[in-house]
Length: 308
Image 1 (cartoon, rainbow, N blue to C red):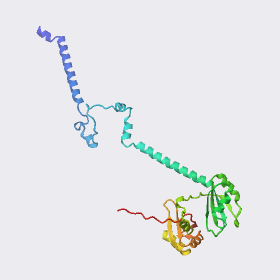
Image 2: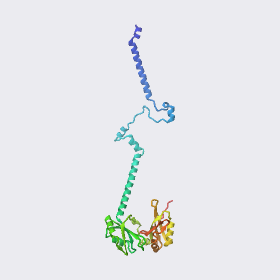
Image 3: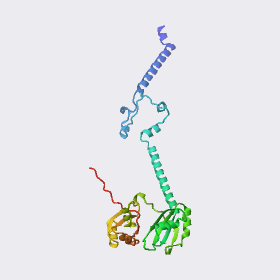
């Protein structure tokens, strides 16, 4: 009877069920064991792949999982990793944005300056063929009948009819009215009045003469423009001393932006400055130099105190 019981179908099925349970338990045990292994460990990377590229670092399979959304929410708001990365790595997009803002600000400043210059040109007239007896004060008084005069500059040889002037008004209406004065005799000659193509360069009030000595220095000083960039201070000094007289002080100015340079030349005697005005149009190196009376004295250079 015992033998019959062991070979019965019920005994066989019980044994099969027990074996299946043991198999499933073994498989689960193996899965639990493998889940604790690091798949990026050196032992699991083929030699061919390891030689081609070094393995990237990775968390182990049982490492805790971090949720950056929960971190952001805990700080009072939800942040994504791209935002955090951009912020903590110097924010290159933010830098580019600031660069664009600065560049845009510079462009707006340039446009404003250009607009101011164009507005000043529209309010300015050019007067030529001026008599040597006409002064800036007299000329400003005459054109004041057309509108409020902001600035008046006379240039050229004071003893020649080649003198010319620029007159700037407070509005465009004054400049348009001033054009009607063309042909009017000022002194001995009829003048020509045309719309100006340039604005009057403003003079820094800090450089204007304040004392009697500085006013006397201005009478001995001329302002020179259109000087070739290759000309040196020594060349300018020799040019005027050979033609006019002894130079007491000279300041040659210029930069890499403009194609020509300017100079302030102070002579020992006022007669030399008057003679220098006749040099306007003469060739200095390769360009005709333009000479006009200076409105400012040549300030002496201040020696800087060097600290050890």
